[in-house]
Length: 91
Image (cartoon, rainbow, N blue to C red):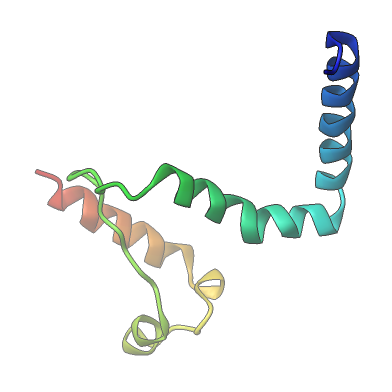
């Protein structure tokens, strides 16, 4: 059986190692690609709140609006117009 001092040292060591790994590109990639997915699976699925609306921007959107395929290159006025329209739809 492990003494409480050994357990504390072990816990601090594991935590420090995890912190150091998370500061590297490998750790950030590992957390981004696997960490969130694991947390969401552990939490389980949940229904979205009724007041939430998901707006997607894809290639069809950009081509129908005659805009660049990357939304980052869209004029800010397009995003502002979208927000204005959605705000008007709010009940």
